[in-house]
Image (cartoon, rainbow, N blue to C red; front, side, top):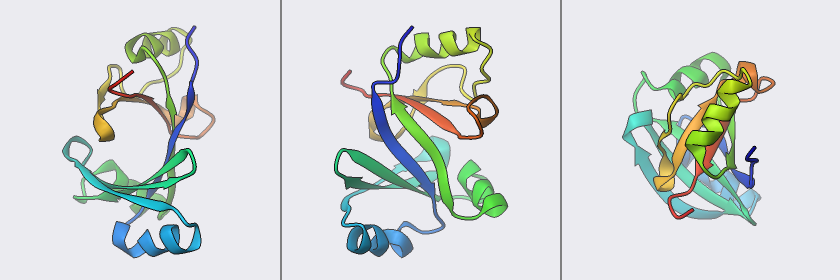
Length: 137
């Protein structure tokens, strides 16, 4: 059985990356690393680094995005926790065999060129959980 190798990032849903940027830089001292658009997920992602942990601010690019719906229902705030794994397709199969509900049955592309898959929060104690396999694994 494969295990999580590290905390990869924490995803935070926001209406505007720019509106929150000064808090992360000025108050927390995070290093702003830039933004990336992820068209498949209908979000723009702002990357901030604190030590070895990355924070990803998720700004919806359309009202149809799951992040926009999340904000509408719950407000801005923590969206998901992501972990680095190896052999993502095998990991998805293992979790499904154990009866966990997956949002993604197969890996898809995420930010930073990573392959990603989400575990449904009903199978992960109420926390939306993302599994990430970096491109250069």
